[in-house]
Length: 56
Image: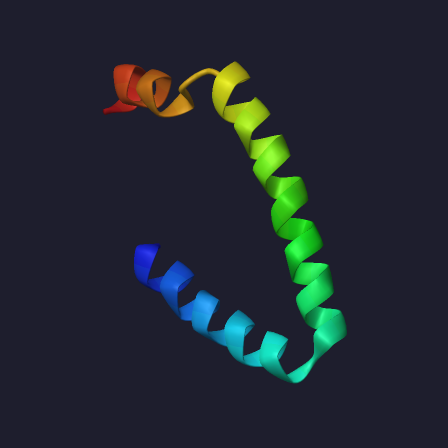
């Protein structure tokens, strides 16, 4: 997953350099995701722990 995210960063950087609108949209989406994921990280249970408890 880490390698996939790093590869995606390269693609986004390349397209953003070529297309200002794309860059604006990506920046907006990242700002929104940062707010939403911060909330989810604080308030959602750790589902992996429950999965490992029952099936791990």
